[in-house]
Amino acid sequence: MLVAGSDPGGVAILHFRPSLSTDAFECYVSELYVVPARRRQGVGRALLDATVELARGRGADQMDLATAEDNVAARCLYESAGFSNGEGAADSPVMYFYELEL
Image 1 (tube, helix red, strand yellow):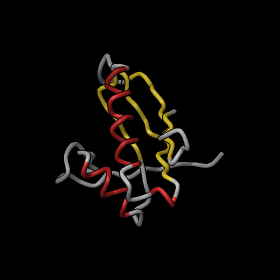
Image 2 (image 1 turned 180 degrees about the vertical axis):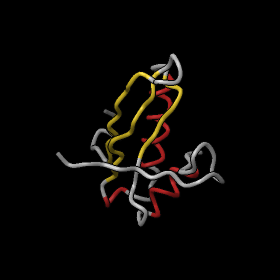
Image 3 (image 1 turned 60 degrees about the vertical axis):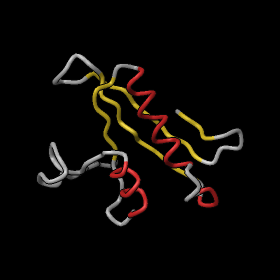
Image 4 (image 1 turned 120 degrees about the vertical axis):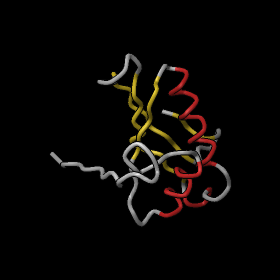
């Protein structure tokens, strides 16, 4: 888990798992949250950059995350950092994230 600042303005929660296709780890970002009063101040970008560096440092070769279709600010942040919701590339078919509450 990463926390932004001494008075936390945001948090990122990461999960590492072995990859099925490579010898490296994959990193899943289960949460990247910035408190409303701190948004549009670079906190989300700093958290995202820190998660990428932490994942690389732990030997991950892939990172994935999910957000709602209407969360345009988050989608812009992720896409500006190089994330794609296309299967393999941005111009490939769109991928979908599914979940089941147990």
